[in-house]
Image 1: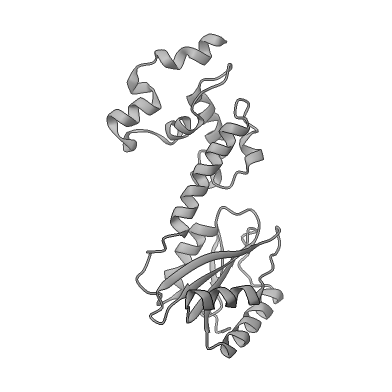
Image 2: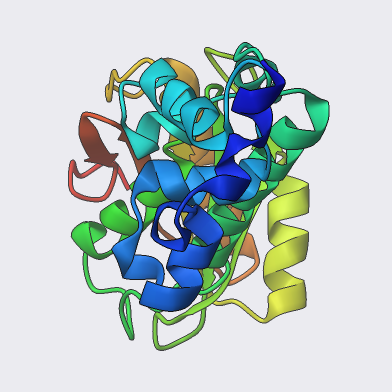
Length: 230
């Protein structure tokens, strides 16, 4: 079994993921080879590329599903312990933060569809509900995006005081509220509707506007503004 563990060092450079990327560029390597670079080394039973392929098989070779795996899920693969799992999880989280931290998808928000693609991308990997807010300036350009709270499988709580405090700190003039429905169901709950109206009323006292409340899931999105509920 030691021979399996050590054999990758004897492979052709074209077959070794790290060397292949250095020589041919990142576009020349597969998803499993990218994962192999993160995993770094194999186990006594499997080399590093075999571990990477087994991990991808766990999520049906779907990178979207890979992003939803927890640290515990990653360690279900024999040979991927805490160190390897945290490296993979950190890389996935960096990808999410890179996308969320630089919302340059549109110079200004003009419709719910401008926001829906972005919000679905940012929130799609959470297995539980999260509540997020986009803070916009007078020209409807995004000044700041922040996940305000995280909840359970069926709900989360958003504190209006924290949201409006952040809005004033960021100099925002309008807000877009958003949360995900991991179940896939896009219908707003009574709690969603009550919170939206509560936020709209409170915002008016601070000379702020709630432009929309968007619910996202893998099935699509629901816009309170589009449905005439704002």
